[in-house]
Amino acid sequence: MTIALYEISVPVFRHGLNTLHRILDKAAAQANQRGYPLELLLHSRFYPDMYPLSRQLERLSQIPLESCSVLTRQPLTPFAFADADFSQYQQGLQHSLTQLDQLQPDAFVAATVQPVVSELAGETQHFVDGLHYLLQQAQPNFYFHLTTAYNLLRHNGVQLGKLDFLGYQAAR
View (tube, helix red, strand yellow):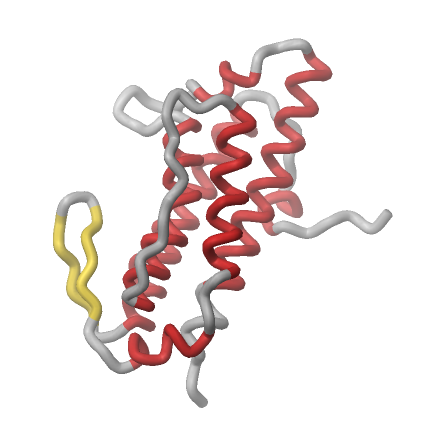
């Protein structure tokens, strides 16, 4: 059985970005209800040498585009974050979703058999092919930042649960 790189990349990234979008909506609603500024959440971090929530959100909007650009060898334009407020991070996520929508499955075919070279934390990484790159670097990196963003929000009192992280919508 052949695994189609498109099917295990674009829909997975889309699901994560949409999940994050809903989580941020919950965070905004709860902050508004409790009367504290959302910017407090954006500056939160676990430890001084770790990225704050704002940078986690930037990376979450960039990683799918960087990863799919590596796999398709097509340039994708990330959202320009500059002194962004909470709504601009939502716009950045939407921008990434729009960019992902423009990708076609056949653009990923060559990456199934070609070596992939990528940068991560300033180091060049070499992978046998796109599948190894996607499963060993791109998706783990995406989920690292998604988990960290979720945990920062939980740590700061946003009421979220496992189903929020997994992206399941409660039956209404």
